[in-house]
Length: 238
Image (cartoon, rainbow, N blue to C red):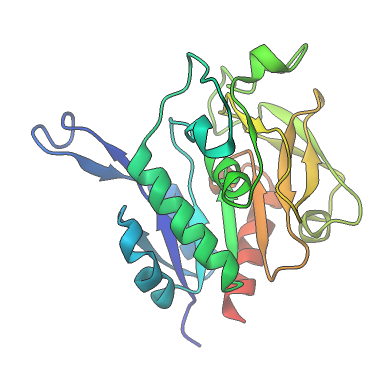
């Protein structure tokens, strides 16, 4: 059986560093490695919103990756923008287009960190723009220790798809974000929470696979992370 083709969204950077005079795309190897390890065939998706339908015709599942940027608050109806917010508008436009298309086609969608936030906005939800300003006694969601180590734990809600996949009530996760889901999009449910109440996981149980997690399971710091990718690839095979 041929491996399912999994599209992964890219990050983008201005000229400098790797490409001194031209803008460039970027993605950590471990995103692709995680898909390959679980049995999928990763392909990378440039930021061309008008080409989203053509990309969707090629892929069996979608991973919306994270990045050091934010969704424009205007896209979820906010009238102000926190000083910490930075945007990558073409990337967001593409991710919104391909995510909405994948959901409409009921193709498996896996949102990781900023990808969870994008997924919630794409389906009609809102975001906390800066956790330290909106969550009393918040944890260090931008953990000071390496991402290859846990930053905190999450409680996984009983009766959810996520709980069924990972088989654990509590999971140690890494954490590298300053935003989070605020108001859930219609049809989504919360499946994981941090001890401070920050939403760490969302899902739509009506879909083949539609899950967003606020941590980075591509680092495989727990068996639960491995099970998540395995379940995603299994859904993409159907």
